[in-house]
Image (cartoon, rainbow, N blue to C red; front, side, top):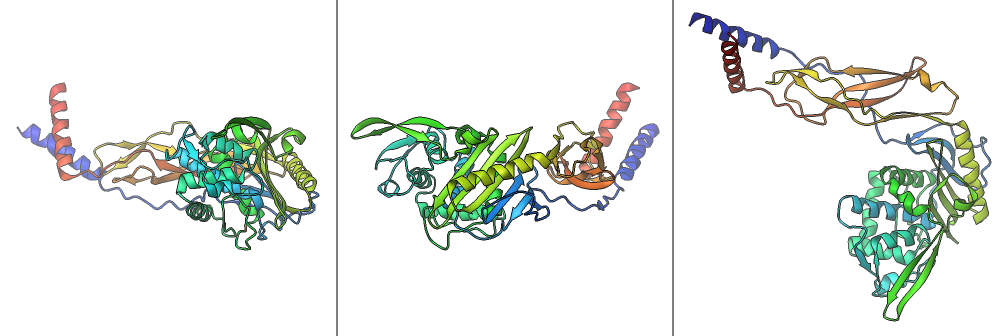
Length: 409
């Protein structure tokens, strides 16, 4: 009996020692993710005729070229980038499906400008309407989708402005879902267009399935019967520039000629935004000049961070270890010709982890350096929740330890 008492006391003392650890504060600055970073405003690096333009690398959000990129301007149909982003948000959260059918209202039919000539009462699938928006820039298709998602265009526009604020597009305000309006209160900037373009292509790369279409037939089914209508892309870069993947053109008398052009070369995605170009040829040539410049000076390092990390010791809990994981991949854009194979990664994990621990909380960081200089960080998160042990948990643990000890004796 005395030996049993000694065993219990020993286990209890060990448990108390485990509970005495204190979690220190990690003395490193928390990484800010999803923030677009500027480089030098180098307007002499490449010839751009349009008064406002920007070049951004998509994976990092880093700006390579900037010409008056925060000037507020009318965006015309590149407004539809936000419309498409909301459509794909709704597809992702299950609010709508690609095979759903949306009905064209009299109001949607009345849209002027670029249109695909939907009739009042005509039904088209969500996927067909996406093609009408991305390929032919259909204003009627945009309004039809806005009404299908939000009930009215005005309610949909509220969603657009809310999404813009979420993305940090502080110099943007939308008045419609198509860009057809001439209102001075409908504006954005080249930088904000690049931000929403980046969100669309990085979060929903399936958009390329539609923005890469040059021509495609759709079928109108109305009371007058069925008829074919050919969608023809407004983005002439699909034929002019071999690396083109999208994205959206726009033009009105007020906005002049605008373009958000996306392209991929050597696994690098670029976004070139041109606003208020004097004619359509200039906007396309400016975009080509920007994209060529970007690809010529850029190299991207990416660490997928998919490897499994070692579990970390945790105190004041029944379990002895907690799983951790990377928050996500790390991307770094270099435009100086550095040797990216010299990039090093160091893991900094909290030394004394104490329960309770919540899944998703920060456990440490992966710090990346190049030539001795820090180039970025990725958070390391707890991959599971661990509860703080109670008195009953310790008594149960002691009892189970005793039983195991007796069974092995």
